[in-house]
Amino acid sequence: MGLLAGVTSTVHFVILTLSHQPEFRGHSWLPLVLSFNWPSVVYALDILGWDVFFPLSILFAAPVFWGSRLATWIRVLMIASGVLALAGLSGVVANDMQLRNIGIVGYVGVFLLVATLLAVLFYRATPLET
Image 1: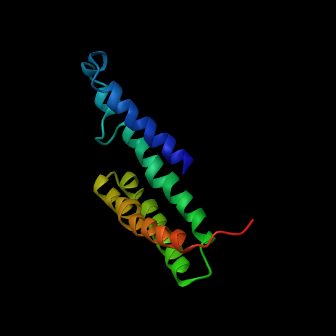
Image 2: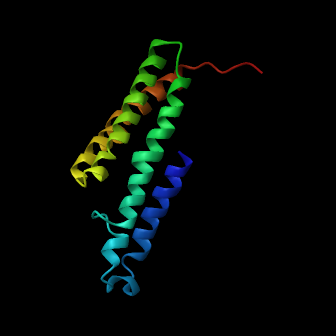
């Protein structure tokens, strides 16, 4: 998850700060480096973050949740989120960025449910006595 945060923060910071600078704007190569149109360097890095680093982190975290019905739902939804996010890579393989929407469903839609259930789980948790 740390890799995802680093990559996506860097990508968006570079786009926001450099793409509008006069020194960059006039170059023909700009769309190949700093645009969110396929293919471009920053788009490929964004895909690396969200369709590789996110699903790997979420799939590795999923087995931690067990022992209650709520934890089981969290684990199942985390696995679904990770698998869908990985499936977003099919857009790169097929050179069809519409297929990336599968991944977006995983890391936006399903993960929103995961985050909500995690909030409930952590709210219900009782602190350990020291």
